[in-house]
Structures are given as C-alpha cells and as structure tokens.
Image (tube, rainbow, N blue to C red; front, side):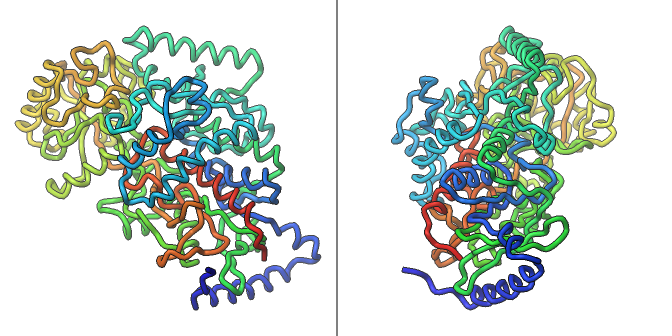
Length: 586
C-alpha cells in the first residue's frame, strides 16, 4: 500500500517544485534542460556508486554519476580493495569449498540480530551475482586472497583460509585520459613492484623469510614485465576504482567531477525525482525519472556529526577516509525523512598519528615482539584481534582509565626483522616522528615508561609477564594466537607461536596509538532492496542508499577482509537493478 507523504515531505516537494521552476527557467532551450534529465542520478563515485550506475546503465537506463571531489574513486581508490562475497565464481574456480548455508550461518553468528534477516539474505544472495556481473561488464578480473582468514574463523561457517577476493592487475592505459582523475591511494605501492593486498604480509617478512623474499622478487618481476609491455600496472583500490570507471566509460555513463550535492528534489507526492547540485560553481537541477542513489560515503570528516553521534574523545584527525566524506548524502537523506542507524560506529582501527597523517596499523601490532598497553602501562587487548574489535575495546577500557591513548611497545629485535611503514629493518625511524612525540625510544623499559608517561613498574611487570607467555607459546591473559586470524600478519619462523615473541633487546620503542578508522559505518536505514526507509518503516520512494551512506549490513562487526566494499558493491548493484525494474517516472 502506498504511504501518504508527511507534511514535511509535501512542503519539501513544493519547495523543490519552486526551485525547479527557478533553476530550470534559467535554461535557454528545452534541449539544454533535457541534457540535465536522466533516469538515475548516483551521488558518489566509489565502489558503491559506480556499481549502482553500471547495473542501471546495463539495464538500459540513462545514468549520471555526481562526484563532489576533483577525482573519482573515493575511499575505494585509497583502499586495499578486499571484497568479502562468499560463494562467488572467483572463489569457486579457485576451489574454495563453501555453501550458501555456511555463509548464512557465519554471517548470522558475526552480525547477530541487529541487522534484519532480509538484508543479510539479500547481501549473500546477490553478492555472487554482482561479482559475475562485474566480470562480464568491466575489464576487471579478481583473485582469491588465499590464506587471509575470515575475522572470526572459529565461528560456525567461518573460513580459516579465507573467502575474500581482490582485483587482479589492471592496466591503467585502459582508462586513457581519465586515469589522471583517479583518486590516489592511501599508501603508495613501494616503487618498482606490483604487489597485491594479499601479499603485503610477506613484504613485511622479506628480510627474514624465504617466502617473503620470493614474493618480493615476484612483485619486482611483475613490475618489469608491465614496463616492458608499456603498461601502467594498478592493483588494490586503484585497480578496482579504475576498472569500474572503465566499465562506465564503455557504458557511456558520465561522471561529473567537482559537482557537490546541494539537496534532493521531490515531486508533489514526496517522491525523490532529482537533485540540486553545484556544477562548475552554478546551482544546477538534475531530474531523475526513476530515482537517486546515495553513495557519497560516510561522515568521518564531519566533526560536528562525529561529536553528536560517537563516543568521545573523537576527532577527524585520526581517520584515513577520503577528505570529502563529510556526510553530505546522509544529511540530505535525513532531511528527506530517512531514518539513521549505527551512527555511533565506524570501520575502526588503531592508528599512529604521524605528522604526515594517521597511519593505520595492520601488521605491526600483530607481528611477534609487539604489545599494546594503556595509560597505566598494562595490556588490555588481544593485539592481533580484528581492528574494529581493537578500537571497541580501547573505548571500553578508557571508561576506566580515563585516557584513550594506547602505546605499541616493541624492542630492537622487532625493528631488525620487520618493515615498519616504509622504513626497512635496521634503518632508523624518521626523526620527525620523535619530534612530534608519537614515537619514544630508550635503552630501558623504565626510561621508556617515563617518556610514555606510564608507571615504570607497571610497564616492566607487563613486559615480563608477556615474555613468559611468549616463551611458553600461550597468552593466558588475552588469548593472542588462539584464532587462525591472529596468525595472518605473523612470522612463521617464530616458535612456539608465530604470534608471540618476547621483548628483551634494547633499545625499546613505543608508538602512540589512537582510535582511528577507515570510515564511518552508520547512515541511512535501508531495506533489502537498498531503498531508504523512514522511522516508521515506510519507503521514501525514489531514494536508495549504498556503501557508507547507509547503515552497514555488518552491524557492529566485521566478517572478513572486504566487509566494507563487498556490501557496498552488492547493494549498489541491487539498487541499480531495482531502479531498472521500476516503472515510475516524474
């Protein structure tokens, strides 16, 4: 049964109609007005937005993508581009044994009842179809991230050997001049190599592992081969964003850069039928005969929203999400009457607040010979736990310690064995890190504690207790190393547990840790068809949302590598198809 529009929706529709008359009246000819009429408007050019645009376009709809930034790709282009989609054809060809029932059991165990069963089912059912669609409609190819464990592999249906895929090597030449508009990566690939996300763990071990050395050699060989062929080799987020954009080029879908959203437009019934944007600095009304897909990312760089919705202390300084993610799509959807969910949460992870920007700590906190301590000099977490859990625990313990800062403590043996960001083993860390106070160093643990501002005796006792666990190969306090996931970023040469090594060799180092994130995960409430819902459960006709513009299907958890991009692409795909199936128009 259709839902009657609210008084606010009617007023918004009337205001939009007046605005439409004013803006559209500025066009000199009907032909110019027609140039700004599409079947579907997609707001945002990350993986969610481009997948939505491609699925709608391939169903015969005329689509435009609106991008606020001067580059396309959003946070997707900056990411490692893992994609968690169980039972897809890439995994099946790789011989990964799985069933839809196993996937559903696992996702239910990870997410729990906070997310409606219909949304979880839609994700699991449509995800494999989305991957097949992308393979057939873009130049993208994918590879299994073998060994990259699900984040909770011991739960029923979990995969200790992993169920994530990532883009294969992509030639940037396929984008032509559009390659110059690709958003740069969060961390540039080391020069002279072509490396995949599933191989980064081995680069950290290249100095101490035969397999690490082999992976590094293969990465160099790939680079040389690509250069000899005259290619521009792209991997990870760069490959995914570029490949999706190439698909849009083939489908004749325009992407308007430097075009921020101002607000949505509504018809007299409250249906979303367009968007007011700023095109080349001029307010421009774009009509949408089918609807609008919100895929403009999260609100990680909107300080007011973070302070309003999230646990304190919080800032925009610790996120690695793209700078233009300021919640524009979420706010516009909220003004349209959309309900919000999960606004207190994010795709959390520990970061070191380096002078050049926050560094998301993946491998270093898991490698043997490192521990995390709080402001009391005590361990408080399994350092190798999934990064979202790590920050949830950080905030929880901060309620007791009244201090959100943590420290990662390592010894010289750790520094001699492992890559740290771009600093090779044995080489000194940048002096600017010390000058900024984010790294301290001392010949004794007591001296290190004084520089950290933690009780010296507590730090000494913590290290001694941990060293005993490391020697025995069993962490009795936080069970680090018990899960298969704990061993992904570890050193197989270390025994008896590849996740645990004692800290005994001076000098000692401590790195300041803050609760960072890859982006926020709360946003507009949607149904299994990616349609935006009001608080009463009714649908806002013509309005869809996907990616970090919508509340995550993962709830407060994280199933495996690619639990951000996998759902983003899937619900973008669902939205595009639903719009194509719709017969409504303005």
